[in-house]
Image 1: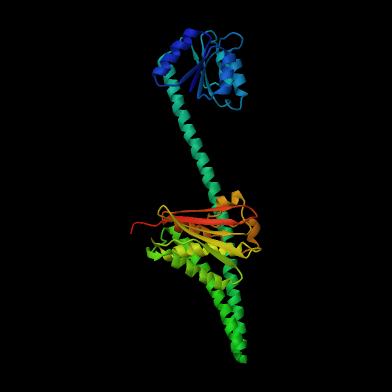
Image 2: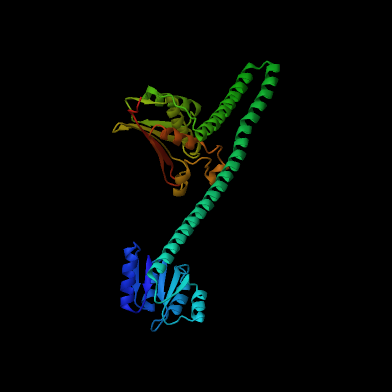
Length: 371
């Protein structure tokens, strides 16, 4: 918007009409004081300012405007009939004016200058936006890189831990075999097997992240019973964690067309997290329901809970809650993979949590997906 400042009403009216006829948005002020009030309230791209005005001349107005942080970069064009000497023109430019035009004004010349300024202003605005975008992109990349470096360090540690354990159990097995102690051999074999399964899970998660990033995560959708799936999951989880009670609430009583293995992966992730992050609790709830042709599944724990800002980031790649990262193992990618799986089933995933009072992770997906 352009602000015209002139103490002569006919000058304001005539110039305003001309500018508006060329599709410029125009505001007016009949004195320096009125102009300053308007500059404080509104944002202007350009101010066309008469030099010779009573009480407060154009130079004084320009100096006052330069002191306003909001308008200090607003361009000013001076118009003057009386002060046409070079010293006044020099003063106009030194006060920060874009131009100093003497009256009588050539309307065509003034329009040309205004259009040129608007073009420069628009280019400058776009360059500033590009600069802000680039700076934001640089900052984002630095933070991705930072998370990636942290992830690589964590991944190396997490992969090394089961490998070290497997190596130790193999050494124990050699000694036990030499002694012929079959029961101890079986015990060490079972422990080594658990570490191998853990290692296999970590590698599978890493491969899934790589597939997501490259757009190659594949799905094999078919009809299956939701209740059979959840019952099987609970049986396996309970066998692995006999002291932890998982209560199932509700049933789906239907089949769903989806990738059974991937949906199992999400539910298992929810349940294992519920166990992991509930060091002082011994129970969790698995809720299953169907509402409006959508399957709803949630896992509620009674553990540590999360702060609101943590809930916003928990499904991001490599995210680990800082205050618990030293207490609990993990790569920070399980929930990221789960979110991608649910998204690829046209579903929704989320969490409700209260710090210190547990969390409830949930997802919903349409039952009747295109086959």
